[in-house]
Image (cartoon, rainbow, N blue to C red; front, side):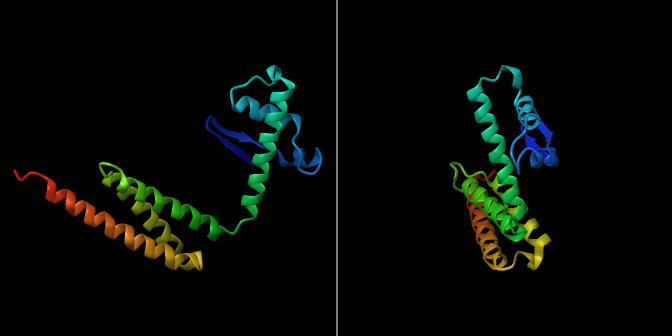
Length: 150
């Protein structure tokens, strides 16, 4: 298991964490997190170390909750994120049609790939996809009509 950071993957040894007290944070996990953040663990004040321990524990708890979550719920949540991102791009001034199209196409690909495995989320996500595609087409047509004829 590893933990993603902006600087790359950091290995996480869950067996050591469990041995440290039922999911507690051990010194090696704190040192790994500090190094991943570009911090020399030896230079941490007790307060900074305590904050880092809390951060590592929160990240471990978030991973635990995510591992227990239903995949359909998580995928549907991410799909809605694509929809919302496309809507933001369409609503920007000027509209960013190419970026919106990328997000819309990604949403379509996710829904096509998952088929009916999203359960009750599927119908509303497919309706949202249809609506955002329609908005994109209308905006693209309006932009095309506003171009000077040459």
